[in-house]
Image 1: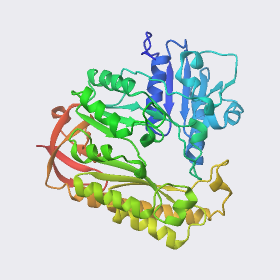
Image 2: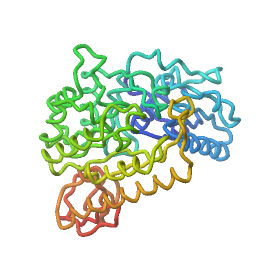
Image 3: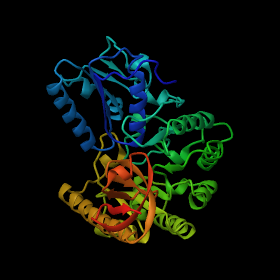
Image 4: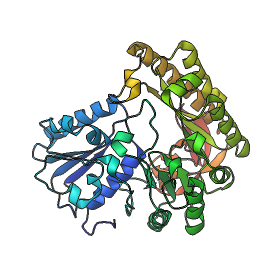
Length: 423
C-alpha cells in the first residue's frame, strides 16, 4: 500500500489504544482516510490485552458520542476483532470493522454493513503498509510481523491478530529507508511476536538477519530499536548486533511474564527462570550500557506467596531498569480464565508490590547516570530520551528543538526521569 494521494482529513479523528503495532496501524489508517471517502468520523483502534483496556475503549466511545453527536463512530482493533457484537450493541457505535478490514480503503470506507469482521485466522500475509511518517512522533515504528503461533494460556491476542506472518525483508527495508529520508532518526521494529519474524518466509531467516540487512542497506539510519522480544527466541546474529552494533539501541524489553518455573509452565511460556536470568546476565556482560525492561504479571491463577517471591526477586536478579507490572486479568476464552482464580485484592496487592520494586529498580538505574553526559533524542519541548530509553527532562528548549539529538549533562533525577542541562 502506498501513501494516500488524498491529504488527511481534519474532521476524521483516530483514537489509539494499546501497543506500538496499533500506533503504526493507526498511522497507516490516517493515510487511507482520504481514499476511503470518510468524513466527520471518529475511529477507535482498540486493544484487548486486558479487561481494563476494553473498558477504557468503551468509556472513550461514549464520551466521543457526547462530544461529537453527528459523527460516524467506527470501532476496530483487537477488541473489535475478538468481540464485534458487543461493540455493535452499543448505541453510540456506527460500524465495527476487523483488523484486516481497517488496513484497506475499501474496508474503512462507507458500508451498509454494520459489522464487517473477517476470520483473522485465514489471513496469511502481512501487507507492507508504506507510511510517510507519524503525526506526532519523532521516532517511527515499522511493522515487520503480525499475529502469533503461540498460545500462552493467559493471552487473547492471537484471536485478535491471527497466526504469525512476516513482512518480506525488502518491503521492510524500503519502509525504513522512506522514513529515514523523511527525517526520522530512530526506527522501532515492532510486531506481536517480533522474534518469530521470518519463520514463514523462504529460507526461514531469523530476526537478526533482518536487522543486519536494514543496517547495511540504510546507512543513514542513526538508531534502530526493537520492541518487546521473547527472550528464548533471540538468535545468535541478533545477540551479536544488540551487544556490538552502536546503531542498535542499547535497550531490550523482554516478555518475561513471571519468575517461577511452575507458573511459567502453566502460562505455557517457552523459557525457564534460569534461561531468563542467564540471557540478561550475558547481555549485560557483553554490553554493560544496555538497559533491560520486562513485562511481569502478578496474581496468575494458582500463584502462591513463594511463586510471587520468585517474580519479585527476578527484578534484581535480571538487573531490570524498567518494569511493566500487570495484575492478572482473566480473559474469557483463554485457558487461564478457567483455572482457580486468586482474590482480586490479593492480585492488586501483589501488582502494587511489583510496581514498588520496579520503581526502586528505576531509581537505581537513574542514579547511575548522575554526573554523566550523553546524547538524547528530543521528542518534544523539555523532554528527550536516551538510547537506553531513559527519559530526560530539561529546560532551555530553544537549544534543543524536537527531533534533534542533543547532548546533556545529568544533575539529578525525580524518580522517573533524569534532569538534564545542556552540555
